[in-house]
Image (cartoon, rainbow, N blue to C red; front, side):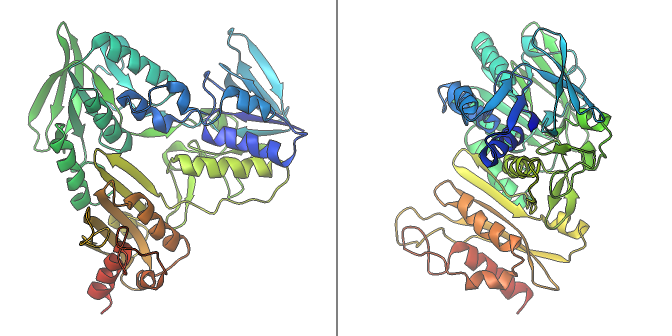
Length: 457
């Protein structure tokens, strides 16, 4: 049995390792477009900030670890075509020549590519000019080199999603004055605006100049740096002079290899797979950021996440050997640190719930993370969304100081949504209590009780 996995990130490596784990006699080849298999791209902002001092530490496993696990790595090798009938994968080798690799089963995990917004000048300016997109290890090295070469005192981050927020913090940590521009009405648009405003204030508290409801329209290279033009929410023109620009406005699926092979596309151009990660094309499986995700509340959607990619890759790696593993679905559980605050979410935002046919209602409360008499207590903003008719828990969002364990408290809500609990049942959970870490009613229970009091009393 020869299993070929295309992609050296979360899903591809997870599939390869799972196949070898289940059957060590399986020959597994991993085709990796760059030279950095199994690196954590999620850790890139922390290398840029200096918190991770050595880039090798971003590797989940070293190349030697992967080879010792029995994986044959083809680095610097790009997959260009799938011959479905012949069960062959065409690749371009590092020397520029082409080869055909025969397979019994093929797992495609080509991931995603950064979105390039319609900004005049973005297609002609690049790293040499101080204009960057950030998605891969290669992008990280290029940005790091620019930071050393240019020694910028000012920078702009276009986008205030997860990566944009992390990079605003990372560049600020290097002593750079950062301007952040976000087209949505508030930073981190995946949470309620009330909670986003808390992050907005935190950014400004640490010196970031934040512009929301604002679009960047053009970038020009001048002798003294970069001239950036934009448009405010009211339509008025804006402009900034900075020395470096980082564009981080999201990703899109890198699905061309699969689409050319006849795999059906879905939301945002991601490919459709079933819950076994089968594509419908014989002996071809797909996983990770190139595929449409099954969301437990929304159905089929596109929601690229590292945690999802690991799960899907593992499922594909089992099923190529004849297994029956199934992907249980995502809830979009995410968390981000912004200086001293942590924002976390799971399930549905109010507008998503409406679009999905629910009748949502939400409350926002501010319970303390632990007993107020014990030093160091901080309030947590907790936004709970439930269905008015059934009382079903639909979503939760939390923003709190990094000491409040918001990142783990959201997991309580994620578990409850996964198992279809209603909001009132959160109070029945037997959660740990001691004054330094919580209260007899935990913050997630206090917030849930506020929802029940308002909508079910």
